[in-house]
Length: 382
Image (cartoon, rainbow, N blue to C red; front, side, top):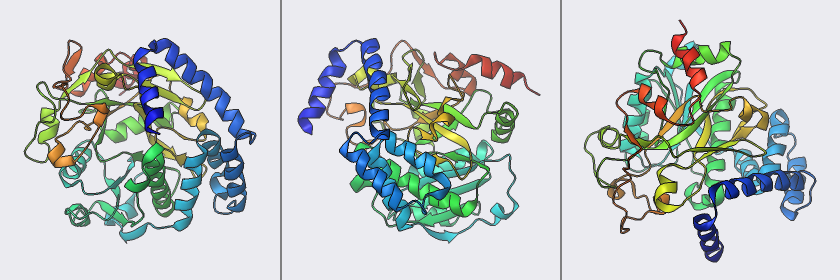
């Protein structure tokens, strides 16, 4: 496995970007039908597993089949996790009984991330979120207790292991099975905002047009899934600086790339690639998600894409962003190998000539891949 990764990273460094994107796109159109028609051992096994559990997945069998065609191992782990029903309801927010449809319910799972989760909930309250649903994965740092004291939070808990199976996106897909269990409880045909603890959803104009106005605009334009790149945020000076206060890291990590992003279309969705990860380490992983969705029973939230896959093609260009606070103080967040940039490396700063400071949400209009026509309409909408 280590040799394979080294070879992959070497190829990433030497291969022209356009050729790499082309080959990856071609491969997606080859692998998907191979899995669909059972031409690989993993696909045969997962199809049998879906048949055995068809009653469990009766509401979303098309979505699950497409997940299996895309990533057979992820579909297998999703079934096992969903079948286990490990998510326990701790308490429901008193506000959820008076749910207003134009306000999305925030979904997030978390473990031992008290500093960021305080900033997380404060930020989302400011942009208009009224309903929160957090899954705590057996935190020991006070995260669970903090969330349990928030009146607008519906709190859930699971003891199912996440990090031990995080390789290959498996941890993420298990987390999505937890969110499926929550949405089974909280209901469908509602808007959900699915974010990690280090992700802060934003769009140009958010200061004057809060999240309910944004959702109303999506509804009127028949958009049920928002395509959003993950913008890695970084400081002006050296990396891994510490911050004080709940939102101190947001004040320090206030720069983002404006001209390094590329959109790639594959069989199942659109990818955004590039950013400081590509500039500094030649890492070419995916940097996009579909976090805001009107969720019906037949849909399944994935990690970087959702199912059925047709929902991933409603937007040709990004109509929102996830401010991504991943490059953080190691002593606080114990992150290793972020962007393949270790603390001991010679890379000290992400800042470059194309960096932009986020003073207001309108600064995001400078990102080279944004859907400007969408925001021209949104910002002028009364």
